[in-house]
Image (cartoon, rainbow, N blue to C red; front, side):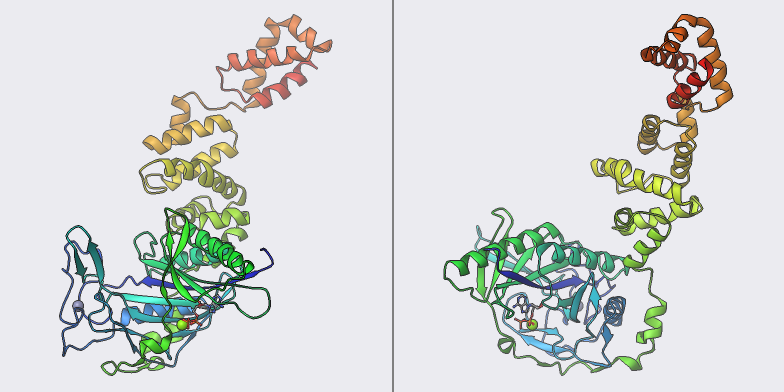
Length: 472
Ligand code: ADP
Ligand code: ZN
Ligand code: MG
């Protein structure tokens, strides 16, 4: 079975975060408070209405395309993609076919074919009990970007990495909220397997509502197709759905060919000569580009962070905004930042994942960095640091004050410790003598006594070292 080489190409849609819809002035709020609240004659397809192009949506796509190094088209146009379905009442969707906004580019090592702009469909809901189907047009005409990759992915994990990186990019650019569970980002995977250089017949899998489903559906299809071929069967080109409960794909329908869509240029919209629009110029697009995910990771690494830490800390916009404040607060000190990275990724992220709060909300960067300094200065043991941190996450507060009131300050002041040690040795001359004559356990007893004398605040490692010296 494993001799088959899998090939995967992704088609990813993302609802763009614009103020208004793609071709009319309705609010872009697909989850509108009320059904059909955000509609007008254009987006419910009344005859005789005319669409107008939303510049903000075009700009979002040009930004995404530029970020991945794609070529912005000199000339672009919209096309009608005809099909008949209740959620697309015009009888066609306005999309782009021969002349998309972006061609080429690369993300996470995967070559991108194109990015184009289209309109989202309405949303149908079927009530089987009442035997009715209802259509909500709040989503009809919402700007939708579609990115298509080349068939250059050969395993499920790479597909997952690509999709996650695209989500992060869309969020970094503010182009889309890109939440898979909400359908703001929709991943479709085309999968084939083959034993030679020629591609096998591909199957398209839809309804992938999480990154995990993307990876599992691909792995499932690779196994299904390989087994089918091994048993002498053939793979039919079709669209399959992902059954989350059953963790398997199932046949939905035979795939339409592009001829079925009868694409032709949309006569009601102007052609786009992008180079003639000042705000679409490469200079204007590049000038407004924020730091991109891979640039941010490289910057974190240049500050001394391990690659895995850099990846973790830039895996969401919230995290990187927080960590950037930590960097400022810590004056970019490398050792302090690595320490902070450790605590943020393990203890802090772990605490938030169990709480109801949004990650890192309520945690102040200045007091957090102060805590890191206390750990670095050995004012706190690692156990004590965890207690103080827990306290800060639960109730806020200043780490030094918390540590003092909880009696967690660790004394590493040699003078104070030596004074305590001398007192202990004076009271326990026989134990000290035992240690000198080779009884190692006696030293542990003396460390314990010194800890007691410092009321638990002494740094035990340092006490041990000083005791050995004092006994001579
Ligand atoms: P279609 O004409 O059926 O839409 P395209 O050539 O436009 O097919 O490709 C659609 C998607 O399928 C792209 O992401 C592409 O990379 C991918 N793809 C094309 N051929 C294959 C194949 N044999 N195996 C896996 N993916 C493929
Ligand atoms: Zn409208
Ligand atoms: Mg195609």
